[in-house]
Length: 509
Image (tube, rainbow, N blue to C red; front, side, top):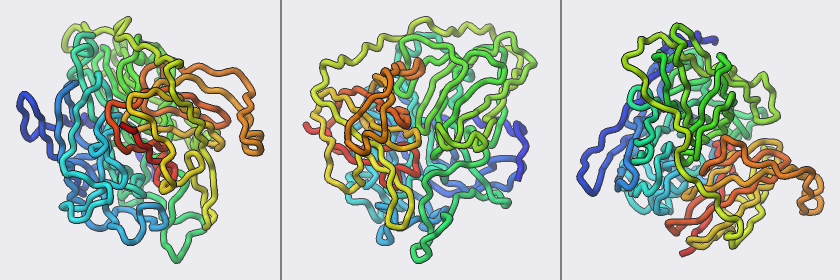
């Protein structure tokens, strides 16, 4: 089934209004429901899951320091949209098939509001997971201006819940950002990029069976999933009509597994002003932006003097990344049409400097951890990945002290790039260095085969997700706080995360 490109307009995601707000508190209620939505005008309406009747969910926009309370409400049906694999941890037959728990990705929150994978709840909170603490989450938003996103995080079915549609933007704004005179209002557009596949009838396709299904257990998890169409803000290959002026775009890779290497077919520069965790020190002009699942990039594109032109956003990232078949790349993302008249003089700017971001001092690190990324086979002959060669239920081994600084060496022994996300904190990427995997597997010794490679320019800000490349040791440095409690770190390829590539960690008071 071949769908036409650029015939549907890009949806602009709505801003969610709070139920009430005073000088001290803001309160939201967010319902999760099943509904039908048009994802392409040549398809029948598609059954999806979403927040507040929208896929993707509405954008939650708050001020830095604003105390926000959110009641996430599960009103989903008892039967899942996709087959659940009961051999996966947390998804065994004695737990409800449909469970949800919401994680605001990038948020600095107390542990009971973080969306811990075993803090799930069902419709009406009738059944809850062993780590469920409360119905209303608290977000203190003690962070600078940043592009975050919220999505489901239920143990063993995150890949299915997010693929069904449970994702949306969460933006924090501050006074500094407002003072920079960036493009704003109609000229600031969040873009969530995802891949999906469809059945002829318009329903979402997700693989049910592997090549050698375990018949007595029904369906099985797959090591990765790549859709054959790209959706932006819930539309397949949309177009956006723009004025000949500067626009700010908040890019988010919301796909399960697919990486994107984004370029403009006009060849012009994209000006990146922010990373996962907020604004950079100064903008950089780049020809391409690589986004792993869950990574964000805050960018400005200048359409000035391009009236009448169309610009296609392209992608050439192989799948799996980085050594997969380039034929698996879906080469088109969306189209910009510079077809609207200029409504007013564009006085917005690409600032020369945005904020000071001092490097975290390596000498302050009280602990260095060496953590492997491992490829394994389960008892059914299926591939699965591990962090530090430990499964989810193994005893907790990462236990940083509150306020301490640590350096983590991510030693990738697999053939994939893994986007590693650490909950609660932001970190800085120090460097990556090639090493001999065979020697490590035989002797457990890191034998470097080349010099350290500094963080890429587009990563030189605060991050919460890092690309750990194959045959490389990736070093990150971070300070643990401001909360103590139990959190998780994991690969953000959702098929990997669901099947063991996730570990709890504890920040000790």
